[in-house]
Length: 268
Image (cartoon, rainbow, N blue to C red; front, side, top):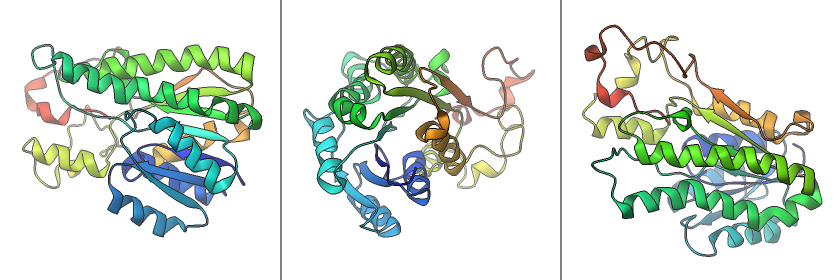
């Protein structure tokens, strides 16, 4: 990772922040991106201005992907990798998903990552770089109250598989994806409190969703991300790795699902 320059979208908090921090610890320079300027400045202070630069902008704004790439080039003179982490996590089902909401989710979670890859491609090609998309285990089907979000992550996974083949063969750029399960981010803590759970809800979770007695930490996702961003990954491309503490697909439901709060089932 030494001397690599990496754009990490949605990195003012949560998984993106943890990935950016770990990248710098491994010797990389990073572009911190997000919507929360105060949080972003705090991340820059933590990492040091010689290691990180801040870009505050909605990733779905017209031209934002190009401006992110320009920020990296202006600050560090090259671009080796991008991490498409920025996403909207919002509950919805067929009754509450209208056209405007659906398009908004797709624009941020699926279309913007594609546009950032496109904007960065020539620069990634020069460095034989890579792309890491941050998906979700919900990409395979999704929970009933995560319809639009799940569809957007399913689309991202197909994008990874498709470009992981074509860009690797034609441009020498690897594209891979990790699908986190339930992760204890700052926003997830607040989201569950808004759903009516106690402030310390994460300390007492149903065993079926947290066999280890806890859910994943952002730093654990970041540790996995480092492999896919590093040269140790070798020529591997077009792959999707699930990061969860239990088999997600085909898992038997609990015998008494009524004991599990519905608001505890959302997964990042």
